[in-house]
Image (tube, rainbow, N blue to C red; front, side):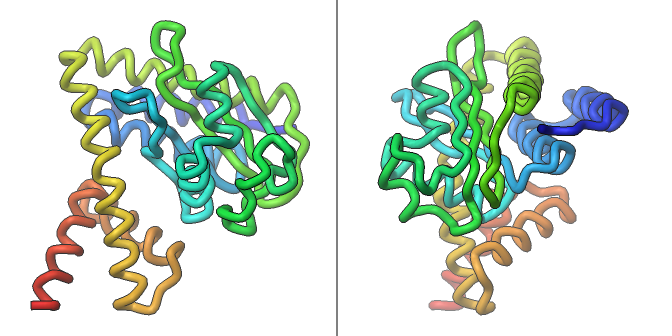
Length: 235
């Protein structure tokens, strides 16, 4: 069962509301996922969105393990988060590594990804993505976990709705598509940093995000700069 400090939850929602007018929608979504991860005590969290062709792509992941979860599902086209999107309902697994619903998933996951839960993020009642969390050990999800995730999925829906009201829908779609497209750049930058500095994927990803936050820049822009510097070294 998830135990939540009510005061901490209210404070987190107020911070999101306060910063909503001064930061871009993608940064707000990243902040929301970070709150889910830290406030609720899960091992990690992520957010996936559907692009124009209705195929899911991951937008935010709190760590390398979460990236392996979302990347594996996107590669195979199956998993609890994909099912949550397709079925427009919560989907949970106490141990995804042995879950018969997705027999090929375990081989592509980080070994510390075990229990997984996903709920749809909706706009106008229709799913546009999923909010996903995982635990590093076997975990029996209960109704409080599911309702907690639905509650924060509603917060994400409100962030999207406010953003759509503040600007043209096409502009919001362009922002999200930009972030989805630049995940490829981020992946390449992580690989470059791993090779150059002898880092693990987790260390490279964490370092990249920290440097971006410290310099108040987008991770995608910093990743592109890192790749540009790498290309200069090769020349």
